[in-house]
Image (cartoon, rainbow, N blue to C red; front, side):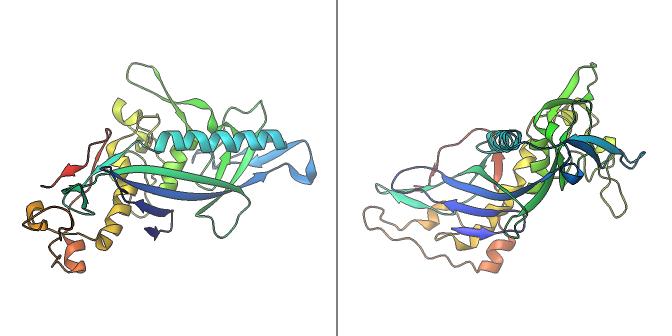
Length: 295
C-alpha cells in the first residue's frame, strides 16, 4: 500500500505467510545540486545563512570534483539511513491489519524504515531539492539552512557544550534530514522556544537547554527521542482506514466464534470518519516487539 505526502511517500508492507510485523518505509527523494565558484574557477566565495547577528557572510568555497561529489552523496545517504531506519517500532494499539496464521489471529506492530534516494539536479519529482557548497579548508563554519548544505555537514562537529563542559557533537546532515521529515528542533513549541508567528525557532534555546535536550539529534547531538517517530506515526494513521480489519472494539470481538482454517472475521461496523477521528496513538518504542496474538 502506498500513500503520498508532501515530504515523502509512504509504503506499508504487510506480513506475508508468516508471523511477522509490518514494515512502514518512508521514501524521501532528495535532489542535490553543486554550488561551485563563479566562472568555473577553482575557488571563490558564497554567502551563507549565518548567525542572525551577522545575517551571514561570504565564505570561501572550492570547486567540486567528481570524486568528492560522489563520496559526499554516498556518505550522506548511508549515514542518514543508518541513523533513521530501523530506529523506531510502533505498537499496534488495537487490531488493525490483523492476519491469520495456522488458525491463530495476530495484530502486527510496525517496523519504521527510511529509504533516502539522492539524485543530481532539481527535478520536480523530488520531495526536497538542496544546494551544496564545498568549503575551503580554511573555513570551519558555514551557516546552512533547509535548502543549502555544505561539505562539512557529514563530519562530526562540536555544536554545544553540556553542563560538565563536555562537547556535544553532531553530524548536521542527520539533523537536517530530520527537518525534511517534518521534525522541529527539540525545544520548538515550548516556553524556551516559542513557535508562533514571528518567533525565531533557530534561537540557541531551541537546540536544547538541559543536557538531555542538547544531546538530542534535533538539538545539538546525535541521540534519537521517541517523539522523533512522529513522521511514521502520522503515516501509519493514514493507512488505518484501508485496513481490512479495523475495529474500536475488543480484539476478541473481531474473531469468529470458531477459529481455524477458513474461518471468517466479523465485519467492521465503524464508519471511516468515526474510526479516524477516534484512532488511538501508535506508541513508539526503541525495541521491536513480537506481533500480538489476538486469540
